[in-house]
Image (cartoon, rainbow, N blue to C red; front, side, top):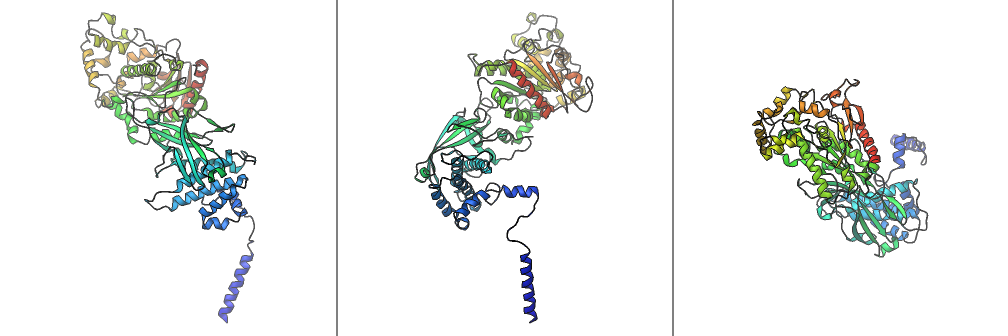
Length: 618
């Protein structure tokens, strides 16, 4: 009896406790938890949104969908053929995505995935909801379903095109056997300038998480952002990565789909050239991602070691030259980035990522990089830069029709600023006078030696350069570049054999001409050139850029020193300052300030201002 009595008391207690919690009510939670609950959907959780659950409940499909998703989706598709309400299409878009995700997670290793057709179906339903023909008013931009449907379209399309698990995307024509029926797909490239024979692979940009860059630059819209990877090509035999977007345009409605009469086109666009597509008279923005290709291309650890390796080695001289980071676009002004000592183009990634995402700059500029072995003599590297710029103009525009190629902006950091200046300066014979009072043509020397001297002592401004930007540039040398540092590091440097031979010929002339001290003991490194007592560089510092060419200067100062005091840890303000700069901007930073957001913003200001002065016809 005592046992029964205790059990009875326990049962009464449980009943009383249950009665304390109402079956229906509203509980106070944190703002973040409330937001998450309100915005749950198949994209961010294992539950569908409240809007989709409402549609399932309307037709009594709540339990049926849990037990047999495929059969329930087929029934809901049949309903959509007669029910014109847009919320049915929205529910089908989300439910197909949820079902595809379920299929993905349940597939066994080594078994081919079948979910991609369900993802593809989700994208089509989302398209019909957003852009299809219907008697019902289109969802407005403030409707949460409008925003979610865009995400379902973009993610469904990307995953519906992927093959395998490495984010590889397959773009082709042919039938797609989606659950509601066959869709005949035609692939086109109305806005992608690359020849597809050059493309090795496309990857879905949304499958990658970017690290290391301050911002990930994306524009909102419809379409699946891609990373286009080319085969190795050109004299450097390197791959290029470019941002692209694929857009699925659907023809027909739900009834056509079920009858096997639906068609669609996969349209490929460059993220640099096309921002909108027209659908039934509406301008629809394309979603783009210009950062993922940059970041994914910098995954290789060897790229990051390139700067130091090239500083010390002669073996990497084949890496020297201009690299166009995107297909050549007539009418767009080239901006050429030139890195500094023991550096490489990767150190421009932050600036390139930011400037390339600016809608004004992206339309009017194209970005190039110059890579060089920064341990070589400055004048030699400058000569290679000059030759490469002129070769680019000759190759890209042999008939001289593209005015934009005659308005290049060369931006150099540290030693790169010195190279930039030597593209924009008329030195006359001022540098030669440091070596000899005899006219160079009067010297009794062979032609190769005379040309070597001419290329190192005489500079004319390039006709293709209209502006140079100096960033932390040691016009009068670096105070950290002592003779001890020069002698120590030069021991480990290797120079190309032709340069060593040429230097030996010059040494023979030491009784004929007054060779600078750096040239008397063999090949001078770039460190010798940036010594604070080098008369060559001190003379060059006082020579202004040529008439018609403009210069801007960005100078880094660490701490709170005010000019003329201050330094960036490598270069003093007094070395970086030049009177002939059109503007001078002080950024509180160390020497590598090309990654500083304030430096980048100043470069943007300069480039915007430059557009008002150079308006080449497109």
